[in-house]
Length: 330
Image 1 (cartoon, rainbow, N blue to C red):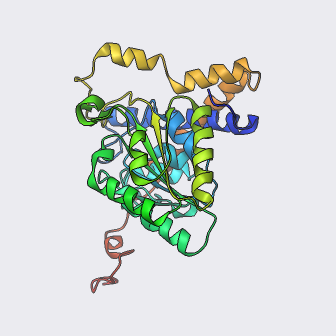
Image 2 (image 1 turned 90 degrees about the horizontal axis):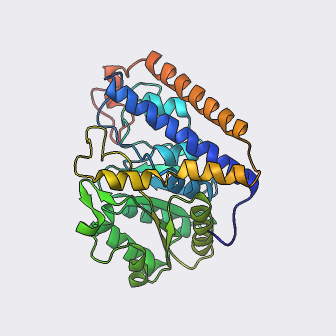
């Protein structure tokens, strides 16, 4: 348990956001199972809601976030337009990226979610560029980049950490360690057992927290973000959590021991946080039910909006590109 907790209203907002993320991804899972409307691979973060939501809500709106292929929680916690996100996942022109990115490369500049890449380990290198720009302009804002335990083994991640350490960049590395890299368990690809211990190699503080405890994650991110913000350079947070579904909805987790799933199901971050806030008198059970009904209604409205939206026009394929196509407008 953290020594200092966020305020009551922040904690209520975190629970509401976690419930919304779970409802959104549960609905996506059903759409996939029913073979309705969604396009391409759907990669969810069920069970990781505390890590993503609490991290984002501990940052300021001016801070840049760089996400990865499990980005729904980060974006919804940043109050990105839920209808436009669903429309993007369905490949519609009303999506946040006009139907051109799909679920794996979502970016929402209006909420400072500037970059997302499904290339494993690519995010930290891009985030180093964003953090350098903030440092160069003398801004108070920082950049936070999210990546998984599998990505932590990629060379790009080590290079970005080293560069951030050398240049004292205002960059917070957040590893959402969900215990699985594709179908590889953590013990099969991580020599030292956790990621946070690597921080000292790059001259930055590192912290390991219970990624299923929203209060602990929020407090740790607040602390490390202030370190980055004060000009002391980068920091690394490892949020130890668990991926309750397969790598994607195509993956049925046949390689996972059922007892392991049962163990982590008992550590469900939403159930634990809900019980804590009710026990402390910050919410009633009826308040939580209202949150759940509101989340369900918002998700269903997003699905309706996306389903009724048009696909991009063929000519849109040559718009929003770096170089003007000679075929544009023909």
